[in-house]
Length: 406
Length: 150
Image (cartoon, rainbow over all chains, first blue to last red; front, side, top):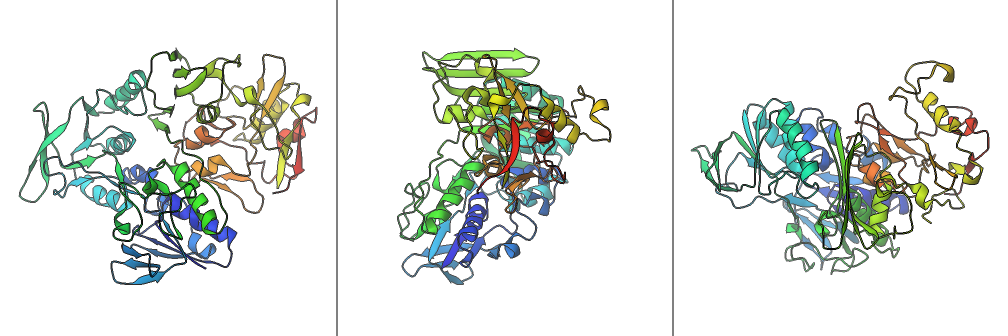
C-alpha cells in the first residue's frame, strides 16, 4: 500500500508518523514545497536570529530515516490525477498513490492594497521561505511596517524590535490582538511594546502605496492620510487555505477542501487535514486531524471530533496570556473581571456555562478551562469561584490511573 | 508503561510529595533540610488541591495515553517515549508558547515562575533507581507506581 502525503506541516507529519506506527510495512512518501520541516509558529524566532533553519524543526533529527518515511521536499505539486491516482509535480514527475492525504496548509493573504501584491519588499509570514526572504531584507532595513496586529504581526514586531528596528504596526481595530484580547489585556501588551519602541497606529487602514523604480514600496498611505516610510512591509492579515493543487482534480473545494466526518474528500481514497480543510486551523487541531485522517487511510473508521479552535496562548516581555472563546458579550451574559497581583482575568458565563475566559499573568494549571468550555460543562453546582477552578472540582480517576471528568 | 496511580481517599494533604519533587528538581546539590521552599526556582511538578469538603486531590501528570500536551506542542519539545510511554520534555527545543498549559485537560502544567520560558513538567524522576521521589515520600501510600497496560 502506497500512502502519499502532500505537506510537511503539523498535519502531514503527524499523519506520516501515525501511518508508520499502524502499518510498519506500508510505503509512505511525504511531498512538500518546504525545503525543511519547520514549525510555522516559530518563524519569528528565525527573524530574531534566535534559531536557525534546523532549530525550527519539530521532528527529531533523523526523523525520515528512523521512521522509514520517504521524503521529497522543496518541490511543487502541480496537480492530482484522481482517475489515474497520481500526484503530478511541476517538474513533470508523477507518483502513484493508493491513499492520498492533502495537508498543504495555508498561504498568507495579501490584500490588494496599492502595490502590495507586485512589490518586492512586501511579504506575508507563513513559510520558512517567507522568513528567509524577509530576514535578508530586514537585516539591512531600518524602518519596518507591519500591517495587522494579530499574533503573527506581534510575533514579528517583537522579533524586529529585538533587532533594534524602527517598527510601526497598523491595525484596523482600535486595539491590538483584537481577536484574542479585550481592551484591558490588549493595553497591557501595547504598553510593553511601546516601551520597547514600537509605534502603533490603531483604527487605521492602509489604502495606498508609493513604489520606487526598483519595485519596492517606500511609503504606505493610510485612510487618514498618514504617510509611513518603510524599507520593508510585513502583511499579517490572515491566511487562505492552499488549495491550488486540487484544481481540476475533481476533489471538491471552494475556499477550502471539503471533507466528511472521517476527513475524506469527495474523491475515493483522498483525504485532507489541517488548515486546508478550514475546520479549526491551529496546531493541536491540525495534528489531531492528521492523526484521524491517517487512521482512516489505514482502514479504521474514526470520526474527527475536536472542532474547537478559538483558543490561544501568548507570551511577550514575560507577560503570558491565555484566551479561550470568542470573547463577545451577549445580552444576559454574566461578565466577571478580576485584577490582582496575579494579573487580569475576565470570564463570560452564559446560562451557567463558561463561554470565554481570558487570563493574563499567571496561567498556571489553567488547562481545565478549555475542557469546561469545549464540553459546555454546567458550572451552576460548583462552589469554587470561576477563576479558581481546577481539576479537583471534577476529579475522577479511572482504572488504569488515567484521570476522568466526573 | 509505569504510571503513578492515585488513591485520593488516602491523601491527607501533607505535601511530602510536593517537597520531594522540589528537592528532586532543585538546581544545586543539597538535601531536603537545606531546600529553600521560598525560592521560586524550586518548583514542584505535582500539586495538591485542598477542597472545601476537607478532602485533598493530588494533581499529577498522567503521562496520558493520548497526551494533549504532545498534540499541542509546536516545537517537538514534548514527545511520548514509545518505549517507556512517558511524556518527555526537552527544555532546549521548547518554543515557550504554552499551548501545552492550555491543552492539558487536567490542569497539570504551568509555566516556570522565574523566567516564564519553560514548562514545569513531570519527568518521572528519570534515572532514579527507586522511581519517582514523590511516591517514595508519600507516607499514606496514596500514590504508588504500577505497570499499566498500554
